[in-house]
Structure formats: C-alpha cells, structure tokens
Length: 244
Image (cartoon, rainbow, N blue to C red; front, side):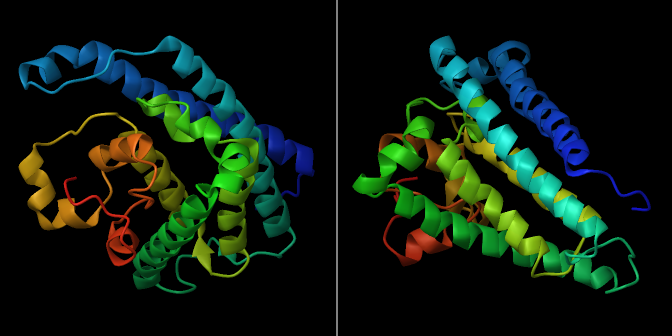
C-alpha cells in the first residue's frame, strides 16, 4: 500500500466492508433458505424452523456491535501494516506458493484451538452472562446468529486475528481466504438444520468437521460441541455428542 491513511479512514472503510459482508452472506443465505429453496428442503423432508423475527432483530443488533469491534481490529492491523509493524505481505514470491496453503491450514488449526478453549471458558457460569449469553438467546439459530456476539466476546474473537498478523507471515489473499472461510463456515453452522442426511456424519468429513447439526445441538446442550471448524478437541476432551 503506497498511501498511508489515518486510522479513522480504515475504520470507516472496514465498517462498511464488514457490514456489507454480514448482510450479503448471512442475509443472502437466510433469504435463499427460507424463500427460494424452501420447497426444495420440504420435498427432501428436511425440517426448517420458521424465522423468529424477534430473535433475528436481536441477533442483528448484537452483530452491529460486533461489527464496530471487528472494524476497529481490522483498521488497527492495516494501519500498522502501513508502518511496517505486521507480518502481512503482498509479494507472492516472498515465501513461495506452497506457503500460501500451509499458512492457511495452520491458521485455521490455530483458530479452531483458540476458539474451542475460549468458547468453553465463556460457558463457565461466572462468565457466561457477560461474554456469551447474547449468542445463546437464539435457541433456534439462523444465519443471522453467526455474527451475534456479546461485545466482550467480540473483543476476544477480534484479538485472535490481530495477534496472527503480528506473529505469522501471512499474504493478504491468505488473510482474506481465512476471513471468508470463517464467515461462510459460521453462517452454515447456524442454519439450524442439517444440509445432508444422517449418514453423512459417518463419513470422514462428517466425523471430523463441525456442521450445522453439531452447532444446533450446542445451542440446546451448552456442554457439547465447542469447536469452530473441527471436532478434534471435542473428541479429545469429551465434549463431543456422538449422536451428531
């Protein structure tokens, strides 16, 4: 980036980008499921809970607060990048193409680990009310719930990616791929119903990755399925519901 912009410039820019991403991905998915493809799922005998608009409005309000916090963290990261303070880079030849895939997978694994232990910590009775209650007010999650964090939780979620760009060399396209993977995965996990039949969970992919059925169970059984992408930590530490 040749031009150095003030912090507020980046904050307003990211505020618009993140809001647009939320309404496009979460809102678009919700519209697609409940309008365009609704009959398709009914024909496949997939039960979809009807939208609860009071819950959706609450999720959107929380998501707007989260957006402010995520925009601040993104603006800080780019502001520091301009000044050479991060490990973000733009030259594809700097570490080679092989490193793009390696760093992408490594960050997903690190993020899943961070998310699992942070998520489980926030379910502690003394912390739950302050850090995670807002998200769980949606007993029947929808795509709108995917971004609905209490402000204190949003701060800790944002700190992960800030820490990453200050410690691990990451190409800009890799960083964007990670953010989009996180966004789309979270939206799909909050569909509130399974996209594929029960037998799908017996496959390798179904056994080792978190899907919408897993997260729906989590919204009803708060002691199960704390992972973001993978079931590894749930399996290892006894928080996997093996019926899902």
